[in-house]
Image 1 (cartoon, rainbow, N blue to C red):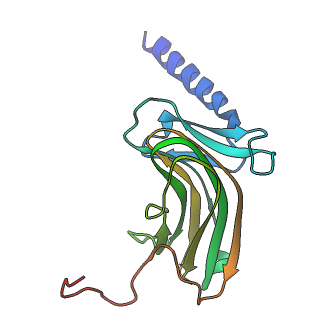
Image 2 (image 1 turned 90 degrees about the horizontal axis):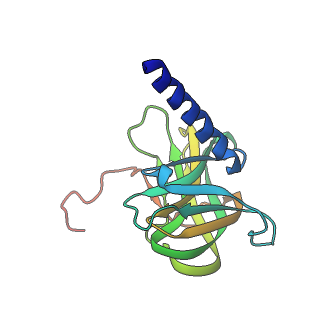
Length: 188
């Protein structure tokens, strides 16, 4: 009997991995509840009429989020400030959506810098909107992670993601590790 159960779960796992063929090459699913979202390449839905990536909720109510993401080596950005520019449109986003960018250091307990657009979210139904995230990449960085996320229900499409080095005078959009202690009197 246990052999049949094992075979059933092996077959279920194989079918599940085969159903993930729509994921864009180089991207993977993550988040607090990625199984509650369909993530795929939507042919012809892009900003220019070509392809776009999409995240679509599968339930009427979701308490969590799904993200389609990538990781890459920070080598060419070490000690510089980068700007990620991308386009997103939405349909019936009940909670919020946005792009996110995170700079990590191996062995650290928290990110060196991070922004997920939570303070400037995409909500409801929108046409294509240009979004930007600007973060510093310290020389100690070992990984850069980025993606698009959908919190709750709805659907988003995203396209034309670009990374560029920008001047240090351009303000960061996210949170960076502090160089010195801050707010030691709790006045802020």
